[in-house]
Length: 246
Image (tube, rainbow, N blue to C red):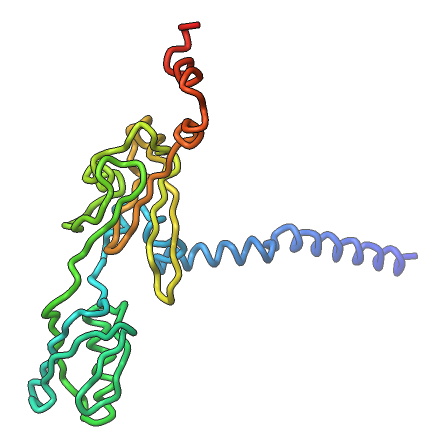
């Protein structure tokens, strides 16, 4: 009897302890989510530039090389390799004494690193200075229901709402709750962000505004009434404009 009682008591203690450990164990999915969020916070990842707040978004923004840009390469210790190159339409540059490399989309520091790697095959620890001699001036495009749609110079930090103002402001026919911001990313993909400018203006809160990057396209669509207005008879439009007149 004593042996059976001790065995049952031991089994009960084991189950209780196991239950306690089970209560403390984390759900694997929750743990993975927590870990990924922590890493994202530490690395500054987890959101595109347009999704970040304006204060974070414009940090560390550097000019990215485009096709037709002109780069001057100087080699202080091996001047025979000095040269001026133009970025070709495919993003590559032809180099003297080394294989061509693709530099489109890179910043100047990144391009310098790529050049050192390329010339490291023919020179020992090459020292290369890269200077941007001619480049495509930063610009943005605004289209759709604005006063003056077109292409504009991007001078300094410009938000989407400021870009609309530069383009003449919103028309009455604009659907400013669904303004679209298009941004081209590497490998030919296009990133799209929807901006609710109606909400921003109503709440006097620009925290959801986005800073433009060179080459961005801001499109303001038409509202529903503007789309169907041309199909309504003039008398019907009069009722919408003056509902009290019957």
